Length: 509
Image (cartoon, rainbow, N blue to C red; front, side, top):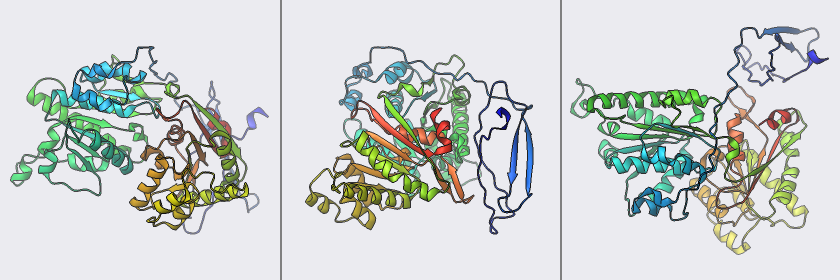
């Protein structure tokens, strides 16, 4: 009947090792309008007869969030030429293109001609890095001695940004000093005070910016505090929607401290707001809350939350459901459809496959090779001669990687040495290998263009709770956002392979 529909079911295993500890489950159930009076949770033992319990959950006191999501409409403007920067040194940075894209054109004035705090929510591939650069150029034009702090949630993201900006801003004509601050690097105060741009992870900046005021009781060095922290005139936080994840508290501390320092310096020196905050993320449902917290005033100037559909490159998303209760056999049944999907959607263009674990990268790559071999064309994905690939893979340390590269398929995960990782990225970018099988963290980390993306399974094994958990939706959207990169493709294609029962849930997004 209508009232006895099952919205979610899952089996939970209690082991002797974890027995007295509690297990918490995250589940998604539909909310109707008007809300039903109650939902029922039924617990049953699969081995003992009569061991079951029915728990009613009353919905009377539940407050639903307001449905209205504030979205910014993309205005039909003539794209701004890069000469709008009115500074030849800055225009040289953007020689590759003559105009800014529609999103950049729309927010250019607020970015480059005001110091208002800003939040930009826009889909992957819509040029948010350039948005950060524009606010940086504005800050350096007004405060040549000011420092910009760019916060990237992952070390791989920070490293990519460093590589890009050292070439772009560290060379002539700007010659700015770009430093990376992560767990692997250590600088003293003098070096930091000479920096123009600091790229760091949230934890590192949280540690560094403590004690910025100094204390009278301390020795002479510490008495004046960390002077360079007071010279920070711009704070850019990338992927700020990760506030909802485990490390969100660190970002909260950073923003609150930055706003406090800014207020303190403003009162001490007079004049406008001292430090400008720029937040970048994918489109959010509660952008208004985030804007209030970043200090964006109620006039909405500085709040830009574009719809996910304003991608510069249109995208086709296909969702495929796979039956199977157990994770590993279900993953194995996805390999043949992966191979067929590549042949159908992207026979000659680059393809990215996202999987949940290092083991899965290896198994998936080997299976795709065996399906290609069954079609009598094992090296179908190799984009260069066999002699070239053998020479290029001489120094590869990982045996599985060395084997798969010879067939034009790369694997990429955190367990590879940095030399192996760089070699794979280089071969993939140059089109020498066509398929890259990577763990999901790559979606945030490395900017590798792909025409076609496959998300193979939407769960990962969570060691803390010893069971398979779904990726957050932001992660899945980030992964499929890697399909169709500007400047390479006219459209992108993505296939999301999910467990059968979740198919309808993902279709809604």
